Amino acid sequence: MHDIEPYYHWLDLYSAAEDPQSPFFGREYSEFTFNNRIYNYYIHPQWDDFGSNTLYLKILYADYADGYAILELIGEWNDAISNDIETLKRNIIEPLLDAGIRKFILLCGNVLNFHGSDDCYYEEWREEVEENFGWICLLETLEHVWPEMEDTDLHFHMHLGPSFNHLNWRRMSPAALVAAVEQLIQRKPKGVYY
Image (cartoon, rainbow, N blue to C red):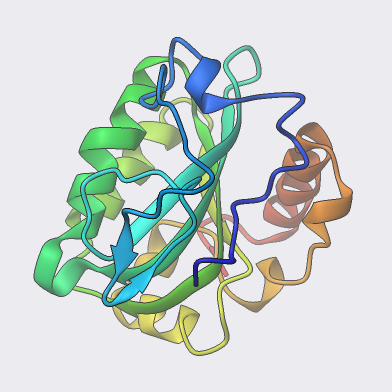
């Protein structure tokens, strides 16, 4: 786990630690001190702690003029025990919403498990972005994870599932990735998220 770094090829374009509107503005990182853990496994020090014991993230890119943010997650997303969605919503999403972000891409290739509870915070988040023509999309959700998300009815609030798991996003610029996601969303019938 300690070898898995957040995607770093956009660092010349954006750094959350240097963005005054980011919840992680001013954060300093070490390449050598491993403090954060998922269970008994240390994770790379470049991942950001936002208050969950099992889920960490990195804001890879935020464009306030065009209103989108791309976040990468790692760990276990656990709403059943630790209510990770409330922590994510209050500590990360709401400051980004306040700064004008309305389109959210969450890269979930390193989300190893999902344990759902209810969908209230997801519904609240969807309503807040939809009233400003925004959306939430999960990419690269692992094959065993997105059905767990579906069981909690997340597909009513976020775009996720097989249709959104095959973009080769690492070869795209942030703007190209958002455009590709929007094309996939526009192909779906209204109200269908997967």
